[in-house]
Length: 156
Image 1 (cartoon, helix red, strand yellow):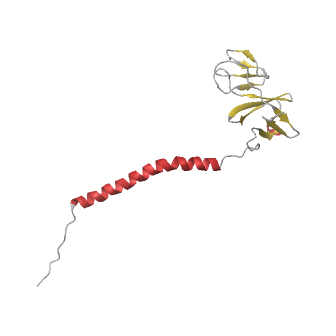
Image 2 (cartoon, rainbow, N blue to C red):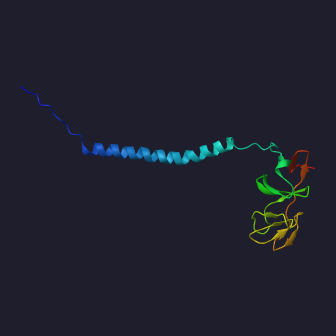
Image 3 (tube, one colour):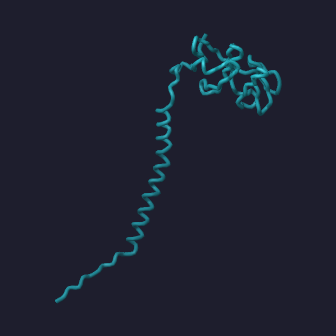
């Protein structure tokens, strides 16, 4: 007597269920990644953020050698751009945002003024409007110049 091995065919729906199960796993993984990735990214950015030298005091400090005479430098103070200008040894710190349209101002060394390239407004080095349609002068920030550093936003 011979035994025949019986080959039991798998049902067709078994193969399609495995394929759909794989797609469900992939789809759920993508959704989970879309939810978790921004949270992880924000956490990593927070942990790697540069430390402010003021430790929450609201001031910015940088070396005086980084601001040669006749030049300007943009820095962030409390999240807002500030332009620091060295005009013949007279150092000023002004808001770098045009009061007309909040665009970043440029320092024109030859005319010794701040210029908005979008609205055409011009400001002197005290922040006063000299021409254009700017509605108000620029905010001037307190600063202290030491022997080798500049501190912006400190209380006098």
